[in-house]
Amino acid sequence: MDNELLNYTLRIADNSLILGQRMSEWCSKGPTLEEDIALSNISLDLFGQANGFYSYASQLDGNKSPDDLAFLRNEREFFNQQIVELENIDFGNTIVRNFLYDSYNFLFYSSLKNSKDDTLSALASKSLKEVKYHLRHSKNWLIRLGDGTEFSKQKVQQSLEDIWQYTHDMFSMDEIDNKMYKLNIGINNSHLKDEWDKIIDETLLEAKLVRPKDGYKAEGGKNGMHTEHLGFLLAEMQFLQRAYPNAKW
Image 1 (cartoon, rainbow, N blue to C red):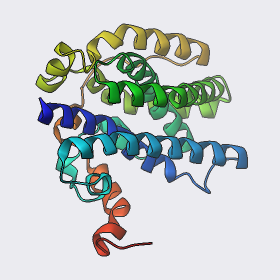
Image 2: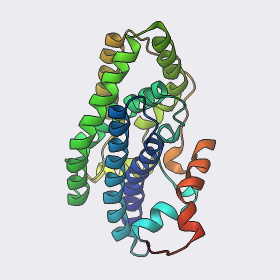
Image 3: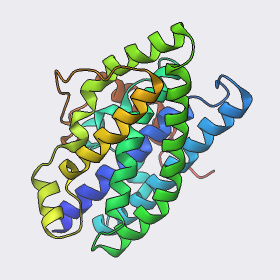
Image 4: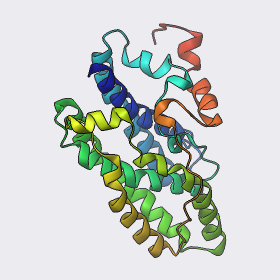
């Protein structure tokens, strides 16, 4: 079971790290000073969550440190969902991506806090306090942009259409997911779909946006299959560690 639990923990950690890195790109570039600080704080929250799960994964691995897991794996060894690695492009696009993922992440941690694994349960409970704010932030902004000017509405509607294909993978279940669920350690992602649909539909209605139709389903992130964006992200994020191995600051 240890290998499956390690992989399961890495999936959670990788999601937080990669989205945290994406959000860090907004530092000093936010549309307002207040929003610049908010986006940066969300990034810090995600890095903190990632550190907690990497620390647990390091214990399970027995050989690699949390920093090794974050900075010394290549893209095929990362197990994050593809949606979190998508480029920001613009503020509205970031809000759409985050809202779709935050809605899932809120439901995920709400269930994972009941895990039979005490460490995962504790980490989920701690993370949930922050994820609630992340969802409130992205939801409020989506409503504001969707029900704003015609230009802002058009922009976020297009972002919805572009990103929607990456939402399906959040609810997929593979052999590792099924095993963790049967052991009451992990959760059944597919059971989150109905509640996620409710959050999405109610918010899009309030934002006066149209829910995209289901079509192509981008999948495979949890098994190491990624978009071209992840390689560029990792090259930047891991540069110092790889250029100056074991450097002390």
